[in-house]
Image 1: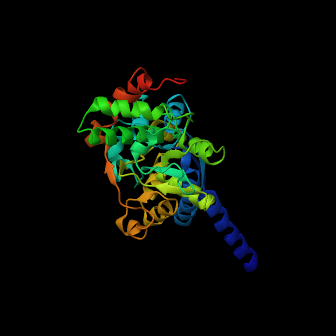
Image 2: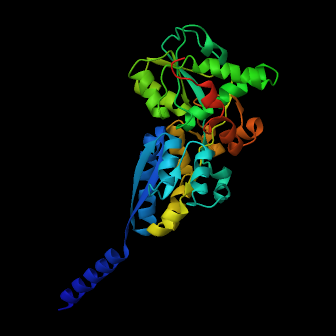
Image 3: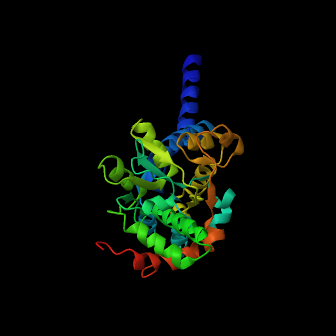
Length: 332
C-alpha cells in the first residue's frame, strides 16, 4: 500500500509539472541573410529558456528583402518580433500602428544588438582589380547589388557609395549623385534582397564584384573556399540592423514577455558569440576583441551624421519618385 501511495504521489508531481510546462511559438520576420544566424540563436535561446522555465519555445523564421519584409508585416504578416536590415523598415511598421514610435529606446544601442557594413566580394585573383568605390564605374566592370526599394543591404550600399563620392568631391552632392548614377549603369540585375544578390554572383556567375553585407561575403568564402576574395574599400557605411517586438501582434498572441526576452537574449555573451561566429560584429567589446582578425577596422560613415537620419534618407532617396527612381532607368 505504501508503494502504491508513493507511486501515486510521484505521478501526481510529474502530472503537475507537465501541466505547468507550456509550449510557445514566436515568429521572427527577418531580413535576407540571417538564416544561419537565427538558426543558431534560436536553438540557444530555446535551450536556455527551457532550462530556466521548463517551457518549450519554437521560433519560426521568415526571410526576405528587409523592405519587402517590413511591408509584409505592415500588411498583416503576424510577426511577434522583427529583426530587419535598417531602421527605416521598422519605422514603417511603427507607422502602421503595430509597435510604438519609441521602439528604438526599448533595447540597448538603439535596439541594434550587432553592427555590420557593406564590403566588396570579387572573384579569385580579383581579375578586374577592384580596390575602391571608383573602380566600380570603370569600363567593363559589372556590379551586383540588390534593389534599394526592397533591400536594406542595397540602401546601405547606395548610401556608402554616395558618401564616398561626396567626400571625394569636397562635399558636392551633384557629383555624388552623378557617381551613384554611373554605378547603377554597371548593375545588370537587381535582386530583391542580399541573399538573392549573393546567389546571382556566386551560383549564377554574373558580375565582377558583389556589394553586400560583410557577413554574406564571409559566408561565401567559408562555403566556397578559394573561389572569392573580400575587398574592404577605403570607407563604407555603418550598418546597425535593428530588432523590435511587434507589440500589437505579440499582445494578441500572448507572447509579449517571451518576445521581449528573446530580443534581450541577443545581447547576452552567448548570443554575441554566436553573432560573431556568423560574421556579424558584436556589440560586446570582450567578444569583439576575440575576432579582431575577422573584422578589420575601416572608416565607416553613419546615416545620422552623413544624411540626417533614416526618415530623411527614405524621403530623399528611396520614396517613390525620389533620387533612386530618377537615376536608375532599367535598360538605359
